[in-house]
Image (tube, rainbow, N blue to C red; front, side):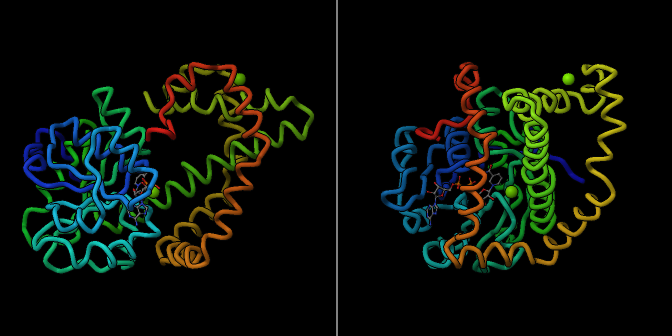
Length: 339
Ligand code: NAD
Ligand code: MG
Ligand code: MG
């Protein structure tokens, strides 16, 4: 597996191009501001008129244009709108408007891999997929670091797509941590698997299940919150810094023994069999099909599930307890008025 670093990329290549970032959400604000701080001058953010991102992007000193105008102007169009709307966006605003020989870029492979859009044959198609939330792509860059990125090329009529992609990745900070060469298929399937099974789906259910078990057994919700949610970060920081052994070095022998004897009772052979079924649904396209169907019915069950999660008692008790820890808000990655 090839990993590229800043020394393998010519960061000036992207600075010589007109770059349009469509969308100013989690990824969009990070890409646009990192590119700007890396010295890219010909930048535009593509947003629909009236969108909440317009004021945020303008406050950051960025030029905002209509997505169709972006497409007419840009040499590189990075699509950072929600995956579920990218097919319509491409068809309605980008397809006929993009300059001959321009490049269309993505931060996730879903639409290209599952053929939800069909890029024109004369344009390059590449992906720079940061392996972290957008707010972290920005905060790590500001700290002088970067988030690892995946790079893939799906269409390369210019013969230059990889060089441009690496330059783009370097300008958003990816070249400090590593830019890993992959394919749209591999990125898409592993990304969906990771977020569903471990990072978002698995982790949230583990936190909730632990919290509910303690509260149902009569323990104070405050205790359950600290034990099952707050401490997750403290533990994961140790794993992130030096692997599982680094965490085991820091925790007590009692905690480590409990990890070995009880952990496999929670995530067991049946859990792993289910992981394999989730992966099969991703690989077959079943998950992508279900998600697109959900969007055809106005995200009805998606919104209901979001509301249900938002009403979980762990969210209320968490808000109260975080209010007692003002340094958390002071160093917050997410500020909804700005990013
Ligand atoms: P988001 O929901 O945070 O932001 C979307 C932005 O697009 C908003 O500014 C919204 O106003 C704008 N938008 C929506 N429809 C639009 C349209 N038709 N025209 C113009 N602008 C429109 O999105 P996100 O989570 O940053 O995801 C963007 C892409 O990045 C997706 O492909 C996603 O898979 C990928 N990605 C996201 C993350 C992440 O951290 N969120 C990580 C890796 C990859
Ligand atoms: Mg993802
Ligand atoms: Mg303990």
